[in-house]
Image 1 (cartoon, rainbow, N blue to C red):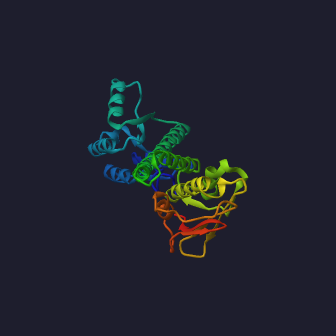
Image 2: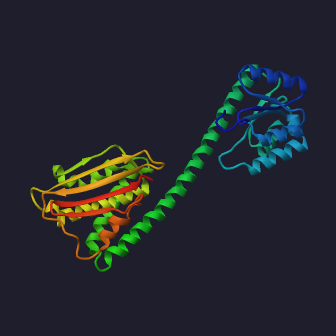
Length: 332
């Protein structure tokens, strides 16, 4: 199917019978799809159904039906469209010829004049140029549609991101939320996730890249292992906040407070269900004995709610050998 639609590249021909047959044969031999219109009314009806360009005579252009139909098309066509017309004319040295041509261009827009009698190669050459122009217009239309969709998607994501930032700020700056330093640190982790999302095309990011970027400063003390899993943008942001919170807690209270402390981060993909999920595990060892927090702060709430768990809530295991966090969550 043609790029612009089923009828988007055909040539509409409105000429006297003999000329129409000649033009149609020449264009068909040059591999154009051609539709000969029997009268002005059919021409306008077919024009509204779609075409790549039109071949009409100057006499036909003077018909009220054609003139008004083309005018309406010119007024109604969107900004990307400039419908091409090849117009067969009489001798160019006739009196008042330039004024007539100017009036035709005013009424019909993108017009190329072809004086009769014409050489076959000239008609085909003008047709090739006209259709190339129309194809570029279709490409411009597709780009405009894509840009509009991207703009809407960007607006939607911006609103969501601002909502996340407001929620983090509200919770971080209240009592027990960690204060301004915690808020800024969480914001940085969110920014890292955003960078990855845009680097990977805007639809999301790989979990391995999210974890790696946040724990990179700890070097070999944090091992990361798991299959390639692509997370949608919202889930990627949530996991960035989770990993940041876990890493911060480990550096302040857990395994990363001692030289011998280590953290193992691993996940598995559960693909046998209707909607794939991942089981993500953060396991600390070699640090001080883990103990539950004395109060429930925003960090705990974030670890519970930053991403949607598939069934059971996240598991917090405060074992003497080290802290373990595990969650099974949707990838989308």
